Image (cartoon, protein in one colour):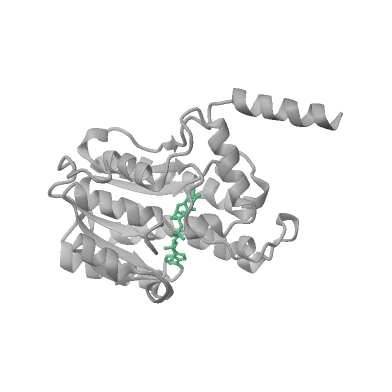
Length: 278
Ligand SMILES: NC(=O)c1ccc[n+]([C@@H]2O[C@H](COP(=O)([O-])OP(=O)(O)OC[C@H]3O[C@@H](n4cnc5c(N)ncnc54)[C@H](O)[C@@H]3O)[C@@H](O)[C@H]2O)c1
């Protein structure tokens, strides 16, 4: 699908994409897929990411404008939504693909979390979804029948030790999606999270032990790990009118990992490993 001309699934729709940093970012792949399907886009990221990333290239490829915004700053989010209201009138979809944990970056053990960093993790990775929806709504930017999506991870339900306080952030993120989804449903606006498999991006590979998490998931998932382009195709369906009654859900996009117990391949490898140890 990534190379196809698309199906016009988002023709006439306008959307905001948060979190594209470089070509590996899931948000980057989603922006390309939304553009392919005919959407008009606004790209937003933290001012620091503008300097470190390559957002100009994506803006050229998608014909989108760039809007700096640090989601930890309430006034910044409010100003962004005011600006977009002036320029777009309204938006039909929003992608929240924002995650950051200073504790994970600094490899601080969960039992010894730095609480200032912990607050930052929760604020940037989860509470920002509330802020984005709140300020979009209070500025009259949310069109009826729209779709809001945030990217999550199975750490919200099951503990992956190296994911540390991001496990907590994803649980909060999914809860905010459900809570807000119930409040926007009267205007046909749906709010969901897509729980994506480990994906090789800058945030992903910054996690200690990421390669093991990636391989573990890939070996267990019957369909294997989906990549960022496959995630993008799934997100397109959720922004489109084909999924009008899907809301308040955590939607697993993980090749079946969440439901699978263990694969034959892994059983055989483990049996071999432990028989060698005995
Ligand atoms: N990579 C994975 O394995 C994986 C798996 C499941 C879910 N996710 C989620 O997908 C989303 C996108 O991550 P990614 O893997 O594409 O990595 P990424 O590093 O490309 O994207 C993370 C983005 O968050 C942005 N960000 C950080 N602080 C911000 C702030 N204060 N204001 C605005 N933006 C800020 C970064 O600039 C970056 O663009 C995240 O929510 C991540 O948790 C990733």
